Amino acid sequence: MTGKRRGQQTIQQAITMAKSNQKPAGEMPRNIFLVEDHPVFRDGLAKMLNAEADLTVCGQAGDAKTGLKGIRQLKPDLAIVDLGLPGKSGLELIKEIRALKLPVKLLVVSMFDEALYAQRVLRAGGDGYIMKQEDPEEILSAIRDVLAGHMYVSEDVFTRSSLKQSADEEGSGALDLLTDSELEVLELLGQGQETDEIARQQEQSAAAIDDQIGSIRKKLKLKNHNALIRYAVCWVQDSSK
Image 1 (cartoon, one colour):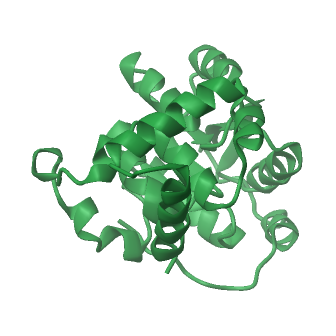
Image 2 (cartoon, helix red, strand yellow):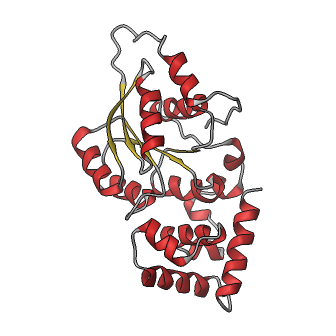
Image 3 (tube, one colour):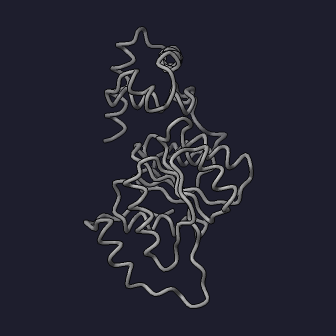
C-alpha cells in the first residue's frame, strides 16, 4: 500500500518531463487500456502515459460495454477505469472482468470520493483507487504500484477501520445494505442532483431512478424524500472531511 504525495505538477508538465525518458533496453512497455467517458481527460491521460518509457496505451473506450470488449481482445496489463460511466458503472465492469477471470490489473481513477468508494472497489476485485484531482506524478506512481502487484489507496483510506476489516468482519450498517448503484445515486443526491439529471447520467429512465431512491429510503428507514435528501447531503459532507 502506498500513500499520496502532494505537489503542483500539471499533466502537461508531466508529459514534457517524460518525453526526455529513454526506453529501457530490452524491456517492453506495459500495456494500459483506458475506460473513461470524458474525452478531454482520457486524451490527456493517454498522452501522459504514452510519453512514459515503460507505459503505453493499447486501447480506449468511453463506456463499460466497449471497455469490456476491448479488454478481452487486447489483454492489457492494466485497465484504468472510471466509476461514473454511461449505462453500466465502473464497479459493474470490474465485477464482470473478475467474473470472467481476465488476468488484468484494475485501477480506478475517478472523481467520486475515495472515502466512499475505495472499499467497494477493492471488494469488487479492483487493485487500487486514486482520484482524478491527484497530481499526474501520483497517478503514475499508483499505476506502477498496481502493475508491480501492490494495492494502491491513500493513507487516509487505508487507516479507516472499514478497509482494515476482512469481508467476514465487515459491519452491517445501513449503508452496507445499499447496492453499488444505490450508493452512487445516494452520493449524487447528496451533491444536489435531481432525479432527471441522475437518470441522464446513468442512461436510465427517471422512473428507474425513482425506484432506486425509494429502495434507498426504505433501507435507511427514512420517513420521506426530504429526510433522504438531508441524510444524503450530510453523509457526503461528513465523508469528505
